[in-house]
Image (cartoon, rainbow, N blue to C red; front, side, top):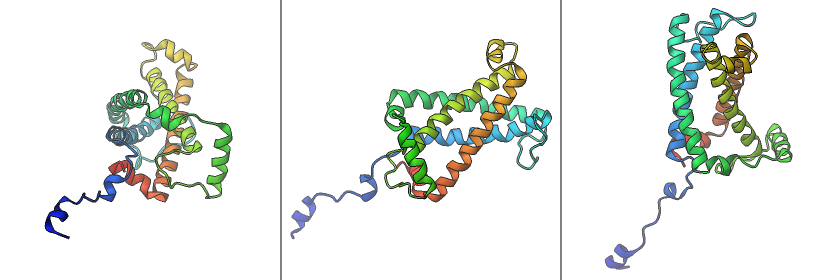
Length: 212
């Protein structure tokens, strides 16, 4: 082969650049901001809970954030604004780009049952990360709705007079605290499962970092 022919030969595409983009940049940025905000809110929320426990237990100070009630409230409110603003950006872009429609719908009960049993038997495939299985769709939609509930119930606790209609919707201040705690528990459970699956399927974590 001549030097001229070699120079004119088409470049071989890099394998990394030919892989499909699973998570665009805006998804990755909002995902990690949300993770940080959520961890701060959970840790500070546990410290706030310890000041007036709903149940017969308290969270260890080693995993709580803020050291005392006032410090925890400062962390909680700061992370709240970060979470809300980031969440709005995520929701708007998810709807505007059609990502939610493509990735999360439709959710068919028969497919949820099928994929759930496959997951329990350890036979659920994760070969194609561009497609969510039915269980993932259900969990992601559920956690988005839970996020809305925890924000609204948090507002009703924070400003029960200013948001009295919202507080009444949740059944009053005390009931709103239970709703808020329940939503927090659901989010923590989701995070534990989410992290466990990322460890079991490390390429999913890589995709959330580099996009491919």
